[in-house]
Length: 362
Ligand code: NAD
Image (cartoon, rainbow, N blue to C red; front, top):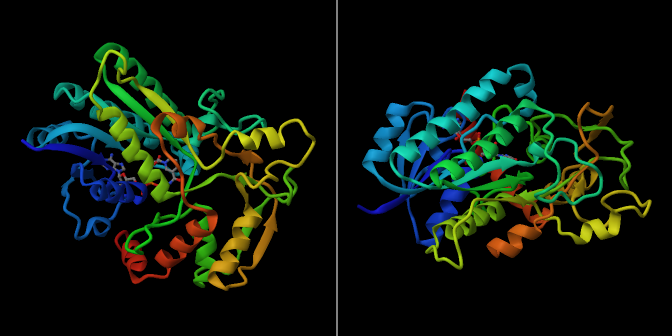
């Protein structure tokens, strides 16, 4: 039997880029497991992967998949991701994200599969203090149910390692953005809540302006700063994590569970911004809302009108990751700039495939 990596949620935004990165490496056979509740079948068009359509909460379905393929590792991206909705309907999020994680882990244990890469998020940190970048050991205090479902699973996987030797790498993505450079696949969430696609919808004439929530934050231009990471850089981090988890185990180099923050920030950022009385984020680590809009204006040639409104409750001024640990341990290196993020996203949003993806769910 050929060994397979199961990419659960592989028809979604990040998953479909991860699948392409693994295929490009030539090292893995892939079975995508996805209910298509949010993902797009078209995201896998023409790719040499198996697709099993079903819900990871369905143990009978999942056991069927594990029986048919010799799965040696799992990448688990399935989740509901709308933080706002998680506050009005938390049980929907616990049911999908936490219960789904439990059924998947039980099935993995049943079939002796003990290598897992888990999609976690910056949301586990809640509103961290301003002495950033955020390291792996920054206190985790989620401020929404979505973030708490992810933290709950990270903790559950730790116990599963202790009890069953299940090795998990939790990758905590900051703001995923951008699209595949060939323009065939990209972000198509419905509803859309992420800043860059919303800005590009203005350039496409789908909305008249972009709202800036809060212009009085203690940052250089008064708007919030976030750490935008290109989806292809996230994809390459999954490949690095998979190789790390799948390497031959020796006494000197045991396979251990671990977690990594994935953004583009580096510790240099802290040295420049902490305790100096300077505005946050002035060193170019992380980007403010206004900076992102400015880049989008350059890339699209559209004026992108803005409407300045009050802060949204719960939005921290600054969220920038230290990715030092991922660079050091996984040998990973983010390669894309904000320009490249916006350029690839714009190419994708202007392509006919984007409209086709959105039509999927209408
Ligand atoms: P997405 O909605 O595009 O992808 C999720 C995929 O999982 C979809 O294809 C969906 O159909 C599938 N899915 C959901 N529940 C399922 C279930 N029970 N069974 C089978 N399939 C199911 O979202 P995304 O932006 O690609 O996010 C992927 C993962 O990354 C999520 O776990 C999310 O929490 C995490 N994450 C995303 C971001 C971001 O900026 N997009 C940031 C941090 C973390």
